[in-house]
Image (cartoon, rainbow over all chains, first blue to last red):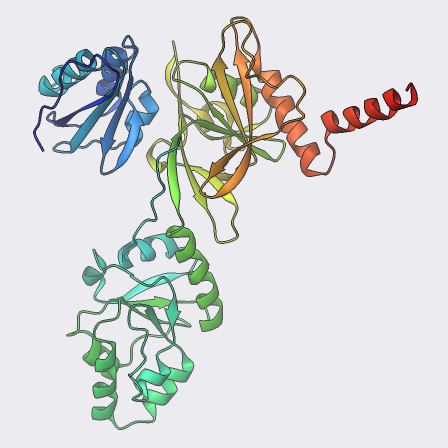
Amino acid sequence: MSPETAQKNAGGSTLTRDVSVLNRYGIHARPAALLVKTATPFACEILIEKNGVKVNAKSIMGLLTLEGNHGAKLKIHATGADAADALAALADLFERKFFED
Amino acid sequence: MWRTAESPRITVADFFEAGRVSLRLDWEANPEAAVGREITEVSLNRPGLALAGFVRYFAHRRIQVLGLAEMTYLGSLPVPERIARLQTLAHVPAVVMSRGRRLPSYVRQALLPLRVPVIRTHLVTGHFMNAATVLMQNMTSPRIRVAGTMVEINGVGVLLEGEPGIGKSEIALALIKRGHSLVVDDTTILTRDSTGAIHGSAVPITREHMEIRGLGIIHVPGLFGVASMREGMRLDLIIRMQKSPAGDDTIDRTGLDTQFRDVLGVDIPLITVPVAAGRDLTNVVEVAALNQRMKQMGHDAARELDEKLKVALARKD
């Protein structure tokens, strides 16, 4: 599976992108809030998946139940017109370790 | 519309942790072998026949329970023979000793090198078999994780769903203030138990918390007391909150046509309520729960009124 499968999404089909949790403490409250803040302005539906379990990226409590520990491999699914931009914005947060460490 | 269900696989270590208190379990031998050791057949077996030498049909995928009968039988054999017979248990997931019995030294000698986890229960054999069967069935029952907040309103389990930010948590908070209980905020695990009922519960790590926009994360039992929380609840009703444009004709105005959602093969009543600025949905949700309870007791207000109307109108013919 390629790490980056996001392309322009004119139709509204689901785009996905693989990301890794790189910061030391994983997705705790602050990174979860940052993800929600970043995801919410996008109109598309955004889900984050770990081991087959998907949660809504616009929900803090949902993200916390994901238990995204350091090193976890996650997949972001975005469905809607602005899906490609949403994927890019969220993947960027993962790559920047949520501005931690 | 909901993701497909999963039926979790369980290991001996999972079983031990889940039953440690309720089944009164202790490790007797080889606890390290329990990690990652899957229980592929969720049931229990008394291995009396196999120990007696009949191994053509032996339910070796199940946890084996050594009760008084098995131990008395083994005790009747010469020692080398006992050890030879116990080799039959080499590939079982785990062995359980009932009534809190310790392993006799010859059993320990036979089972230790086989790396078979041995658990001791302080229950009597029959009670353990019943309780452990129910526990394992519930652990492996089909389940789905759904986006929704679950509350208990006067004994009715209600799942509130709707897109993030629509106000599910705020309604739950208002319901708690009125004396109802929170089951879980935001992410609910629904399972179908061994009786066919659907149960809602929380992901353990976030069980006692909610997120309220503007406040952040709050600790519910800390603020409202332990009575404000329930660990799990049967699901009776789903309320879908929906922003709907004026003139939306998908909203049921009579309550005559009950809608259902298929949850793990069980039909759960579904109500869609429109969300509009300034509309206090707490009352609506509370009344919906009470109305559902009336229906479960055999009273359907919409239908009863409709019948009355039909009779009254017929008289005017």
